[in-house]
Length: 310
Image (cartoon, rainbow, N blue to C red; front, side, top):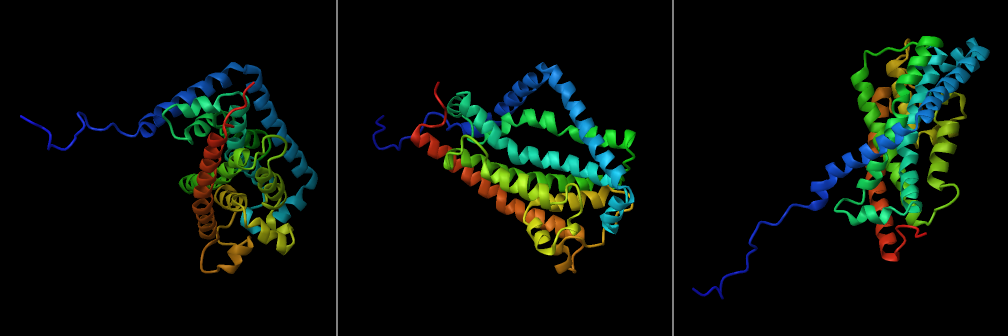
């Protein structure tokens, strides 16, 4: 029987998208590799704990020196325990810094180690290597929450209220997503702008400059001049510090506005304003970061600059 007039048909159903099929396995392989590397440096783990203790001690001594002055500057929104205030600042700052700075670091490491092109020859998304390589920082940085909080409570008089932990968890997801969007924008500069040495500008402006000076990690935003308070409202750090402190600091008041944006939106509670701002920042920054990072990878592929050949 002739089959000349029959339409062509593949013998088997087409396979699924290899990138999707292998993403989970690739992420697990990256995470396992980074865990084994992290576990092999026992001295670094010891120094990691010591560093957290010293950082917490430094702010405890600062709080003792300022005594009632520091507590009085906190205002009713954050309670009166300066150590609780500062421990939240330290731990939230570590979380945000990991997601904001680590994508660039991982891309740079893959480039200079000559492995980025090998990663992207595998059937995986262009985003999988940077996500997988961040596993080491997740192992190294995220647990600092427990150590910093534990040291603060055991040795330095910090007190926390854990009744609102589900809401704290949701806010944590929001500010981590917004920070990761900024991190991808930062990582995209490695290939898009050829920022392969020196200081990366996105990290410097957002985290080292604006977040360090304006967001309220170590002192409340209210001590700043009003124009600088509005500048602080441009980054996710400010809303993360405000929301988490209201939820976990004893004596904090949920309804007292602190940030300028909370004062101009009186129909919403301060926590609702924080959630709205973080949501908007996430919706804007995360897709923008994914887009720019993808464009950077494609640019490097076209130019043959994914990896530095020795």
